[in-house]
Amino acid sequence: MKIITSIKDQTDYCNSLRKKGESISLIPTMGNLHKGHESLLFDPSYIKNKKIVSLFVNPLQFNNSDDYKNYPKSIDADIEILEKNKVDCLFMPSEDEILGDISESESFDLPEHMNILCGKYRDGHFLGVFKIIKQLFKIVRPTAAYFGKKDYQQLIMINHIAKEYFKNEIKIVACDTIREDNGLAMSSRNNRMTKSQRNIASFVYKKLVVLREIIKTDKNYNFKELQKISIKELSIIGIKIEYLELLSSNNFSVIQKDDTDNLMLFVAFYISGVRLIDNIEV
Ligand code: PAF
Image (cartoon, rainbow, N blue to C red; front, side):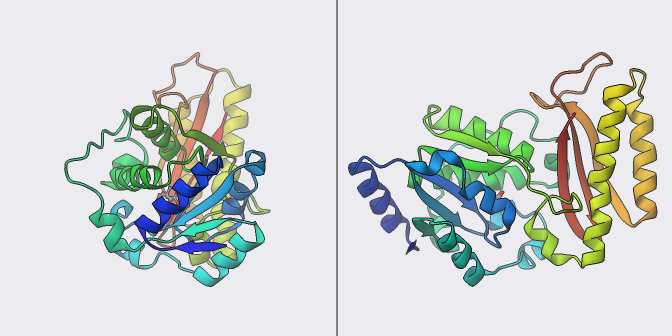
């Protein structure tokens, strides 16, 4: 696997691939790779494409400096995973070069609904992701780029970037959330919890599954009531819910009484200081 650390070398490499008629798949990551990332690495559309993984812990998207400092790093293990998955190139730019390359005059128009859910609680987070993804897309100019559905709001924003700034020439591939056996969504942050904390955290997913069942089967469900009870029950086992919402997966609008299509439950929560998110389609 080729390891590239400068923007110029990465641009040259991508240009040389294009000259040879190759298509490029980009998988942006912040490292500390786990099975969730691996699932992004074996999508069937790779059969022909060259696989480029970027690894950049993006300081712009952390609203909490401790979270940034504590973000787990495991570069040797990451390289092993990428080589096992036959990745062609790892792009690992330096912070100075990437941040220095983002021009103040560039436009970063966030789409609608980025000020709710995570946008409401993580000031500047989506703008930070936006800046870095736009930059990576400009450097690599991939044919396809891969993102997990766990970060659903991020996914909606990336679709917006592809449409508004890259004329929909980059195909955004949404990959299913991969879960541990107990149901907990895979996340690099899971490494910051003990086994027993991970087990407790899995009760949030179990709760989402129960709520989905109620919403689907009970025509008279009262979401406000369900939300209140769920938050209380989860707090008893040490989980602090930041938000738990039932919204439309199309545009994050609040669900009206008779809506049954495109419903999605979204949750963010803390367990022992670790912040996690999850969602399920209803
Ligand atoms: O989902 C992530 O890991 C990050 O937000 C991303 C897309 C790599 C941008 O830094």
